[in-house]
Image (cartoon, rainbow, N blue to C red; front, side, top):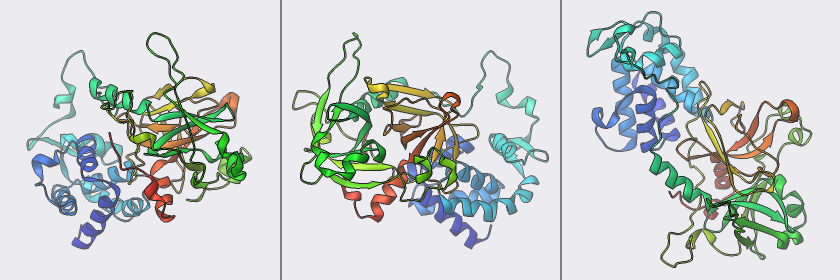
Length: 396
């Protein structure tokens, strides 16, 4: 790659990742420990140095292709991939690479003429460490092992940030805190209220509605909207979705089926327990950048929800995501939902927010998908409308 190409690719990567996510991406997708191999510094310089090393060692095409695969929602990344990666593939076919890049190369059709090396010595696949004899096999290499205590603690915190949406005492859907006093749910959950703002006094959000370990169901915490200034922003769904023909038109960046509501008080800043010194409830931060998304193999999607008016439930599909719309405004997955799940947060296995659930396959008896709105696109909309200030900074 020439210097000008490196600069263009660097800028696309900088816009698609934050420093920590980029390090994680390099370890998980390319088995490249940036901390050990590239010095710390300004993020732009770190990315540039990684690109130069990839260029020198012959895995630049793989790097660009992997970035494009995990950032399907970033148009500049996809443009870079189409512009450079295809031209680099023929060069990549002639390169010798480390064994750690073998799977990536095979996935991007570079395998037939690759010479695999380990510590500079040519190896056959049978001689590589991953083929040692034994009783254990990593059958799904893209499904990570979980640190149990960390995972459980994050789930506990998230439980207090998800609520059931009620209007005049009846359950409508699910929502979640995205700032100290801001709750998000689907536009279609509150369509009538948005159309007739006098109905806002009938809207309540029920937090902490869940079944305890002893089987007792907590009634939860009810909170109303700010009567004077409750509607922060909203966008409709598409006409095609309202007709149950979701593929008849491509949604625009202003058809994201969400409503952002201001509460009567900053519940997210209040203590979660009864004691003044207890941890504050917190909120779920809308991501500032496109998340890492993998469709081949499908990445897991976890959904916290209030299906069928029930206490809080968790649905998990370890092979959830399978497609992204042409312009990145919709994400499809196979994780289960039910009526009442509209407005639920969708997470990856590390509890990073991915999407706002909003829709299910209209072929109810033969349903093939559920559908969500990428959460970072909602943040982009709020930024354009100069309403991003209602959101809280991301917290654990």
